[in-house]
Image (cartoon, rainbow over all chains, first blue to last red; front, top):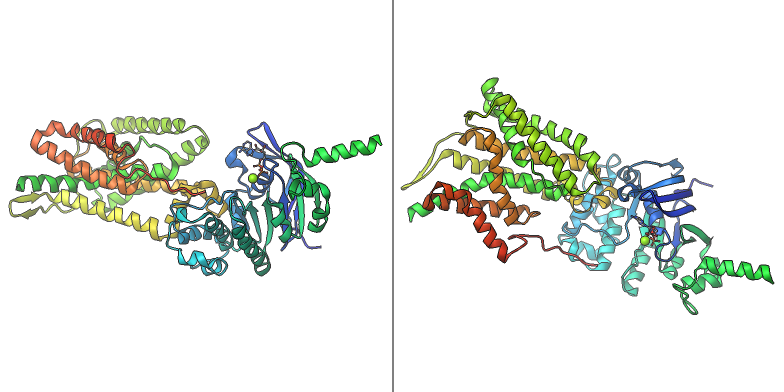
Length: 269
Length: 290
Ligand SMILES: Nc1ncnc2c1ncn2[C@@H]1O[C@H](COP(=O)(O)OP(=O)(O)O)[C@@H](O)[C@H]1O
Ligand SMILES: [Mg+2]
């Protein structure tokens, strides 16, 4: 088997020297594939991406144990900008477009990821082929774009850098279902046509399981279930807590509690 | 009437150098979030470098300016690396205190080396005055304004059209995201300090070579604070417009009310304007969209 685009092995992440957000988490993203990382708010999804892309130090966070490998290479302590230049793109939660820069300028800034690999004009066509509506507005300031367009721009910035892996944090956040559908079909196209691996973080498990080849479910800083999408869709507990069928037990119980409860039941019976 | 026109022209033209100093300040504030209280001292130090190179080493003014700029740029890099970077993540007040500390070190150093005397470094620019009917504009005023205008225009072009300039703006607006896009934000911060120091030095040399050089030069940055507050701390356009406006008001005050009033009137005007526009003329109307 070929080497994984991203291999996270047993990492623990600690914020502010005190708050532990990840507790021995392991996931793997094979080259060229889409892997979904699901879980409810506060589970540690974003933290996982931050650990991979090297931006934890900006938030006084650090990987206290475990390893992160990018195409086989241990990337501990590598600064974020160097990882970006090595082909790891991170589309942050909340899009983070540069609000007072135009679309074109946002893309120009993103071309810094090509430093040391490629020179010359910024290839904006690469982005506009996927998101034609950005082309019409390319001289406009990004702050005035709609939420969906900002998400498109954020993804567009990532592909400007011709990455080998994209970490995509909640692209569906706050968007209308139709817009989400459009963006997800483009995410699939990008994955196919560019051969880029994608680690897709979502709270919207339904759409994520439709596009992923493999999925992990995260709770309290640990992976609680993993497997192919078909398997997870068939799991009654996943259905109950993440696919929103039946009574949504949000806030009351969690996947772990259920399993625990079942285990106990099995024990007792 | 021609008196009014003359005062107005003189004032607005001399506002050009003020705008340079304001630019030096706003570059840092926008780019790094630091309120830099050493702007005036950096400007003064640059002017002393120029003076030393011309008068003490006999170099031609343009060469002296170039050396002064290099010297200041090196110091700016050192200051960023040695003092500021270790402070990153500390509260803004700590960084602000560091710039105040820097200002007093420069002030003390300059007085120790050159004393408190007033020197007259050779002019950087030709001094042919412009005479128009009965209005006379001194050559230095005109030349200073021209240099300031060209430099400011150059900065606008740099930030608008070059990829480095765009990367600096991106870093200023969201450093973490900039880093995820491959921008080396440490070198962006360093470059920001260098650019600011260079602009300040040009302003200092222009002032020194037209109005004389003493440690008092640093105080010229005072009226700039009025301009910056008026323009809205984070707006380069605002700082420039406000600088010209304040230059104009100062000249009118000096002309009609006597020399002393020029130090007070601008601040009074600023206070009055701020009552009506608390964020300054161009204070940021942030665009946000969720
Ligand atoms: N910058 C931070 N400082 C301290 N704690 C944080 C920080 N970011 C996240 N956390 C904590 O880490 C946990 C995981 O957060 P996060 O990774 O953002 O979850 P998710 O993306 O799954 O919603 C949460 O308990 C959160 O409060
Ligand atoms: Mg999150």
